[in-house]
Length: 256
Image (cartoon, rainbow, N blue to C red; front, top):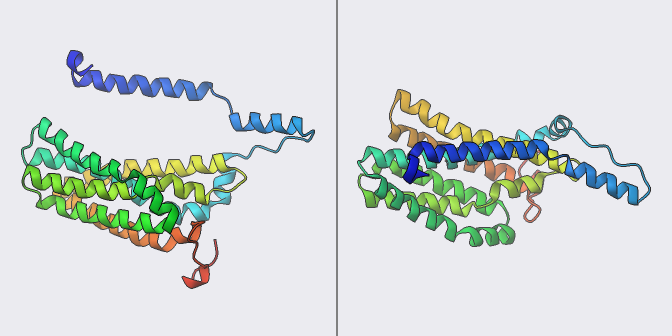
């Protein structure tokens, strides 16, 4: 598509794919409700009431307004990384090929940590992955304004890739840990929505700071946001971690 129609062709592929996905979702019924009805029929009992999304989210609003805030910070930092690195590459005069190389090396560092991150998450607990991930991402964001050449940007982007890789799968894992047995699908839908809001928030914050200051300042702001998110996650993640759950009274906080 790029060869024949250029960038508009690539965007057209994305638009068509999104529209096809929307049609598919709209045509798909509530599979969980159907399965529950079939199971109830086999068990000769009335089917359980299907919970509404709003009802589930209201019931579990405390989780969404505590641990969920950390999810917003993680998603915002990750999406800001994808916006800041190519913009900084453009600012220091790198062409498209060099920028692609920067992203390729960063992505390789990211992917190499998928398995170790999952192992550490299951072995030591979620907080030992979530907090270091945000700390490293914050450090990488802080160092972006110091990258004045291609290879210095490669080093910073690789550090960001390491930070992102450390936290591989943390968002949906935390959602699964905190989700209730009743209304799990509805809860995870709301959880995913918070993550999507965070993904939209990151570039929006970058744009707002660039409008009044500079791209370097925007990177520093996102670094501070990442560090603040690390502190927030340190407080709330252990309380919903089934592996390394800390007693609420140890933190001086009420139980979940």
